[in-house]
Length: 201
Image (tube, rainbow, N blue to C red; front, top):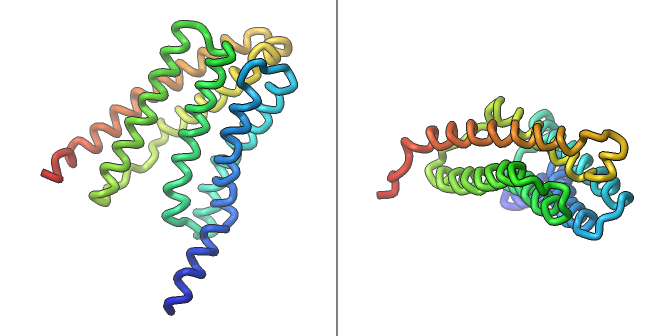
């Protein structure tokens, strides 16, 4: 492979559709936050839900398309989890700020989820130095699904309650399911990384 072929290949991967979808998810983060920060009118909540839903859909398709089209790249592998965590944490903070997520017990579910996200991110970065991969488990995928639906209910908030009266309660139940699965998968990841702790000593 020539010297010019490598940069050209990298440029193609950078502008490949899977990566463009990930970029779109990153752009969606501040848009969702702006639409949700108070005062948040009904039309803003529905708009935020639309942008959030589109971002969640890209979360599935960017990885799927990268695999079937063989367009996986280090950039995409790095940005994909970053975009996911930014979307989740920012949305949790925004729905807490606008009082959609206000119940004391539900806030604790959000805290558990955010702490786990940062812990696993640090663990992945640490293990990456030793070329140790941490594949996403099936339970982690269930956690992500429950989390996405839960946040959708909180994004709709009072506007959603006008359509589905117990929507906040449904969101709270799903968020706690996600929190329990979050603890489960977090413990699994810690066990997987435990054997490599202290390798730098």
